[in-house]
Amino acid sequence: MIANTPQAPYYAVIFTSLRTDGDNGYGSMSVEMEELARQQPGFLGIESAREEVGITVSYWESLEAIKNWKANARHLFAQQQGREKWYEQYKVRICKVERDYGF
Image (cartoon, rainbow, N blue to C red):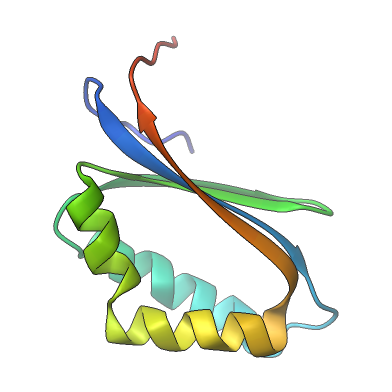
């Protein structure tokens, strides 16, 4: 599903990853993190796709909201698990959305 974002400007966090083999608890933590993100002040939506490369884009109303999400204790634990068990490689990009359009 495509996120229903508000009128720009807002922010996008693009998380691109290459996974390790096996689930190793990733699936359940992924569901938990999406549910927790939806509860965070400033969260606007999320989109995700996975083939060889996984790409998840979350949308936020401010840089402060992104900073607070990154510092969430449960999210910090998931980040640690990701570095130790789930990802061969990842990259996070934070962008300001100046304009969007679609149909």
